[in-house]
Amino acid sequence: MLLAHSSGGALLAVAAHHIEPTLVPDVGYTEVVAVALSARGTLLALPSGDRVSLGQFMLLTVFRQMRELGRHCRTFVRVDRRNLRSLALCDRVGLRHVVDDPSDPTLVQRWGTLPE
Ligand SMILES: CC(C)(COP(=O)(O)OP(=O)(O)OC[C@H]1O[C@@H](n2cnc3c(N)ncnc32)[C@H](O)[C@@H]1OP(=O)(O)O)[C@@H](O)C(=O)NCCC(=O)NCCS
Image (cartoon, rainbow, N blue to C red; front, side):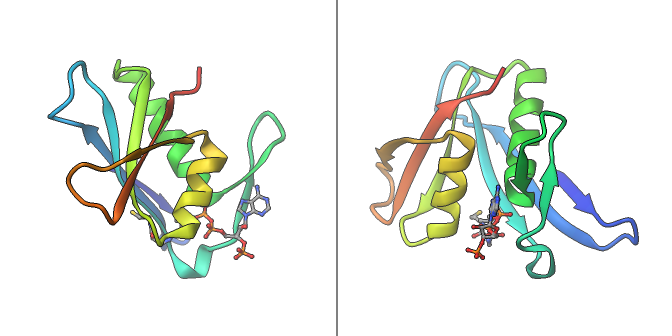
């Protein structure tokens, strides 16, 4: 689990990931990304100069941690089909391969490759 705090200690964002136990080899699955309402719309500058949302920054940090932990290069999330903000975030981070979730028709899986 990753937490992002302001310099004053307020919780701004959270992300959590784990290995998907039904998949072999070790495929990383992101369980949750959430940004505090007060922090929505915050943009950060990456070393590359790209500007990213706080949610995108958290997901990119998750991907980096997955790499460091030796997870499989493919990764995915499950998203409620109505959650347009989450789907837009998936598009921004490259989770663009759409797969129906076999366990729940209201969910869609979004797959992509961990960045180098
Ligand atoms: C899904 C979520 C994590 C995405 O957070 P995020 O990537 O930080 O940013 P948001 O989608 O909230 O977008 C904030 C605004 O910044 C904009 N934005 C995002 N990236 C941008 C960029 N690089 N440049 C300019 N604007 C950008 C968005 O378009 C949005 O603008 P809008 O409010 O006018 O539509 C966040 O919306 C959230 O916490 N939702 C509730 C929890 C949730 O549903 N989590 C997913 C299921 S676990």
